[in-house]
Length: 131
Picture (tube, one colour):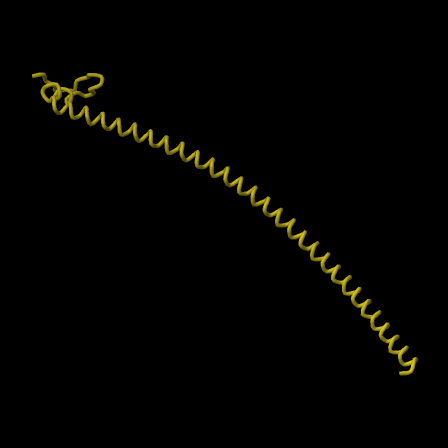
């Protein structure tokens, strides 16, 4: 092969290698830019997710506090209602017991108290007889 053909082939090979290096360099730069853009996008997403998580934690803490307050208020109300019901039950039991005692005693005393106009004060109604 003549030397000038060998030189042309060699020059063509060098040119192709140089073009391949330039293409590879450009591809690396493009890839680096894409990686940097993806990293920025990822960092932005991470920051927004962290912010959303912080807000969710704050809301959860507020809801938990509100729930605790409501629960406490409801427990106090339930205790108060239970005490009122217990007092009412006790009062009704006492009234029933006194009525039962009065029925069992019977007699003239029972009849007199029924005929009084106002048994607490002791005022007698008209036509009351003691005998």
